[in-house]
Image (tube, rainbow, N blue to C red):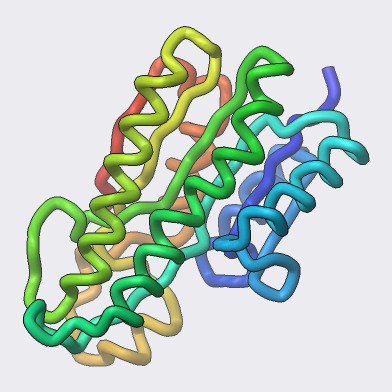
Length: 211
């Protein structure tokens, strides 16, 4: 059997790189996307990329959707429409655009895995993160809905929901924070690899909290 084809969005970020390295060690054939390659909120552009991948490699066994966005600083009564739309596009609509392109491919080949990166923060409200939390919550509901719609198809859809990832950017932004509860990039990548592989076949519509 040929090596699985794994499509990773947000591949230039800290978690995206860790995920790519994890799959590379497993011998996967990687397709790495970042904003320099494609705007993941552009449905037509995403479709074109996926069509090209299938034409070259024949299939897509796993989609790992790491890309997204984070903003904070506005109270709910001051959220701008631009901020709201930006967060919803990056964190929720991008998942829809990718699903539109990848799900038909996975149906034709008889199975696949879709793993999104949501957030533990999606579980409840937090000050000054209204648009971000709403968009990550929307992403989780989309994951659950798609999983239900694809029940019995051989396509498993899940997310990982980290608290705070231990990245250079987060260390720089929060130099005095207690990092004991932060999630290592390797641990997050290992969990994603589990969900994206054969061992995760029985997990459907779940958000595995990390941290």
